Length: 351
Image 1 (cartoon, rainbow, N blue to C red):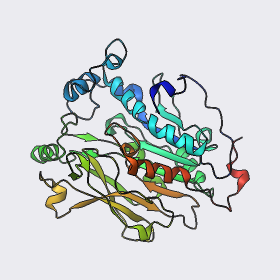
Image 2 (image 1 turned 90 degrees about the horizontal axis):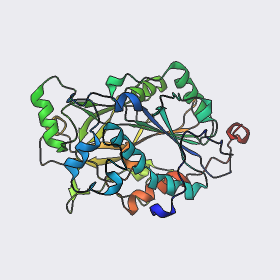
Image 3 (image 1 turned 135 degrees about the vertical axis):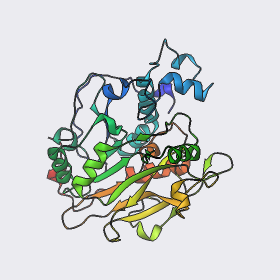
Image 4 (image 1 turned 90 degrees about the vertical axis):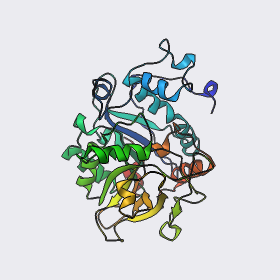
């Protein structure tokens, strides 16, 4: 959708509850960060912070050398980079909104004005697909409370619900500076420091829900024809819901997490797609003999949980690094995924 056709923007508004519509999913995105804590980080710190918009402009020059990203129009510090994430979500919001006929609600754990919004019934009561984007740096100490974990657990007892967890990369864990530099040379992004650890909030939520996954590394995917991401290795026999119908690849991002399994029970979680790794530069992951990393995973419903749990990196839903028809097919599959016919309608209606 062109900018001229975008709906007018509002700010500081209270979310209007979306009424349940049979077969039409209601999506909510939850950014796990504290916007003030992230944007107020000391720019003299080398590690564990986002780049400033000035640094982005310098590295990506001349991509952002237009009036809309100038100091007259756009924040130039870390806050500007955080706003890029919001802007890069617009295409996903637009497509999903068209398919579902519901606006995609976007929440921040702590927003620009310091207003805290925990995961609770105010978000979950009118949500069918909850997307938790784990882009909080570990040093900012975000963590899911027992009440939030229980609220999400109760959310998943509703038929037809879906939780998409997206803890981001974990770069530079080792105290060995040579290994950190190896990781840096592997992903090749000058905007990512030698140590950038994400996702304490998402990790705590995952632990509370008992999901056997850990986000590790920041791996550069293999590419074809320049910087087009190499096709996924998919396992369609494990995908009865068709999440990956018509999907051959996601969008390129230079440092993606490997979603490592911490439980070998294949009935608990299914790896639906793996991504080939760029082998042009060494990395501890590839030196251990790995050639692909886990990219997209599914935890089917079980006796205690009626909803699905998916694992997919947040950058798959943004357009900072582009996208194509295959990616849009993935978005549509998520949006079109029908609510179960036996859904308890009363429990999904917004108050």
